[in-house]
Length: 73
Picture (tube, rainbow, N blue to C red):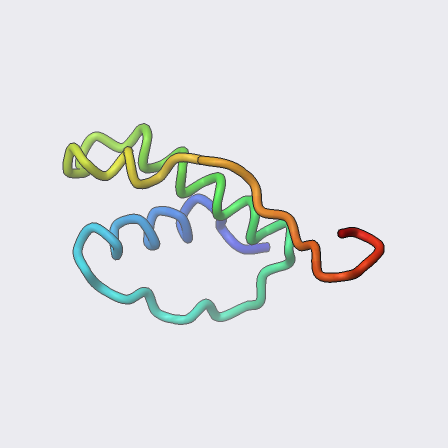
């Protein structure tokens, strides 16, 4: 099982430093990917070493839905 908190920390800090993160050595499930997304938001809101503008970039602003099939539309 991947360390969700560590992945989130690497993503946010790479964003701050303008760097790329190395590829993960294992695949993430959809649930893990959503957990990483939530952990990035949490990390950016609570980590004190970030620039002042950073927490504003990591906020949930809404949800996206896919409406590509006629039944769902």
